Length: 488
Image (cartoon, rainbow, N blue to C red; front, side):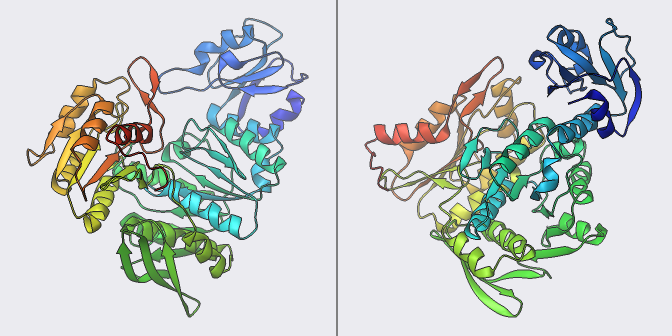
């Protein structure tokens, strides 16, 4: 593809130095991935500035550079394109290079603090049941029809996102359910994408290491709806109501307590799941979703609301929901024939942990034993809040390490400990040993909750990333206690 044609995709070009009569065969923003006839986009980051690696990109074969700074190129055969914003430029170039794939897909963007992953999986189940080829973009992985691809972040960088959309089109995908993080909205990863439906699940404290205040966090989430044709909003969330008042696009609301277009009524929650009624166009339908908890009512209700907006017949939606077997790492039971429960959950925010523990409390006949920690280099304010929640809602807690990253795990644990009101806890920094302790101390009818990492199969330490899977560790120690029945 010719560089002169590529320039047509860049509306914010400030200057061009060098020839534009060049063939471009690859785009990159990592200088190590530059090859012959590639274009390198220099992006300023939180820890590194891509402009510092331009020389390396050229040495590796890049023939054109896109950046924000004023630069004097060392070689006359290199073209330098100065732009207003490198991240937006990367999104525009990537979309153009892959033939504007997002325009050929119906994309449902789901944002919010909690529930994004579950809602996208439920939407895939509903759309699959309706006969569509579907894709998912999100935290656990990216799915192209039935193939699961690894994901490095909740919402990929714009280059990888357009590559993924292109791959989905090649596989005849028509609908995509996509998690849209606040980071991706602030960092222009989804720039240029028009969402058929934008979805808002809720907003509670998280990511205040990146966003200075909760209002900044909300304003980032709100940007999704600048790119959406219509919206589905949780009307029971105060920030959801602010969105409803602010948006100029068609809005459909869902909820349990307040006024909403779709309401769940006659709710019953048991260990088997949630049961409720929903009134759609004057007809009452019975809903069953086999994951317990009030949050499961909200997640399934959200998916029903989106299905309704997409004109999916309600019978197809309800039938899909009742057959869902669960989402990896989301209130996932580990059953090996033991007489107590073990649950793996991704809960890593105060609200998420509280919701899960309250759900367990509603059916637990024995003790609740919680194992959790908090991630390093992330919002420190939530650590004592989560400690307080665990102290009040668990019978016993083992505070442990999560993904400490560059922080001292024992300092993180001490900050979590500051929130405890009772002495119903102990500290075991080694996560493997913490899970072992919880499994070995559990008695009949107890529930062991292993929270924070969910589907993750790694642990990020100061100088390395190691394989670590809560599910695998729990199964190992259940086996050592004599519970090996995989038929459960």
